[in-house]
Length: 307
Image (cartoon, rainbow, N blue to C red; front, top):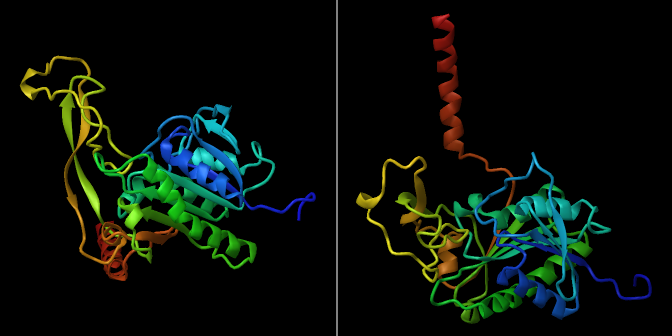
């Protein structure tokens, strides 16, 4: 009991799609409706997809209070990592939250895409600050997924969120990792939770010359194309002026690399909610360490002999 009322653990929500994104709003509604948590929101004021773990350094952040029913919420002019950092600093909220949840992202975050993900970075920043955290993503497929699926995804993740908070309360939650969770497209018929490892899947990107900022499809934060986004008619390269002072280029999907291994992407495509523990350090393979262990003495010998 606290101040005569039942104590509720505090959960701070952030994301990279922006504070108005349906994924974040759906997650917040589900958390609030459970009546189990004190919910806080500190998220970017606009979309900051695929900014990875970048932070604002040269300019001050602008922070504005936002009206979201049932929560205390702030919109931040910076990145997801900025939003988490200032949310944990106690300059906006009176205390540090028990758990940070970043999401729900529109698009999965598996394999190498984890490195690019602002959603994952929001959770990683909390981990850097010693606060337990989870990043949540929904495997959105244009033309198939619906906004209501974010609510289903949030509800599907509630059991693991409550389980984590129970372990935090008991001081038994591990301190050396944070979790990256991906929810399958057909969330209503999911197969359950599956503990996985980060794989090596990645979308191969290229560049195409365009004549306007709006030409081309919208990129999801996973750097896959959202086929439901509006597209202008493609302009043939031969019609583009090579004399213009500034040339415009836009990324486009050229293919993908997918491993057949038992990893996060593989199990997500099989219909599981994948739960992948992540850390801040990425240790190299021992074979690579041995390679450089043998290489460096010979480099030293060449430098010594040339001197």
